Length: 77
Image 1 (spheres, rainbow, N blue to C red):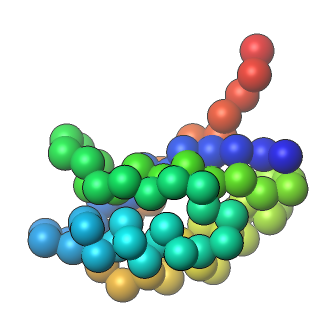
Image 2 (cartoon, helix red, strand yellow; image 1 turned 90 degrees about the horizontal axis):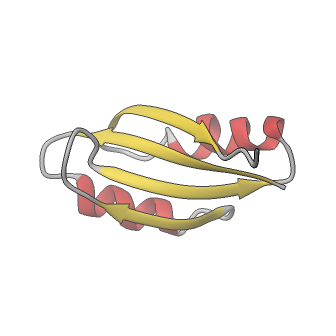
Image 3 (cartoon, rainbow, N blue to C red; image 1 turned 180 degrees about the vertical axis):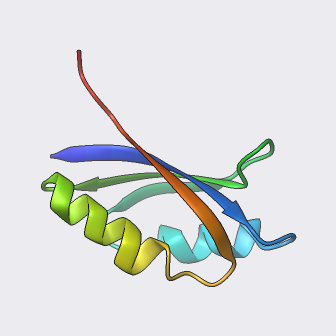
């Protein structure tokens, strides 16, 4: 299992709607609108890195109102 945080910037005023839409996507375990340089932080999981990439590119990035994403895979050192 691969887990990651996805940091998202949105159009002005769209953070809450983006977080709600993303929270309904399978594989997303948490989606919160926040303040700071990013507008939404998502925690997601997938079986492998390829599936995680597909989740981010095909599903999360297609949500209307997103302008940029940054995916940060979780590592256990």
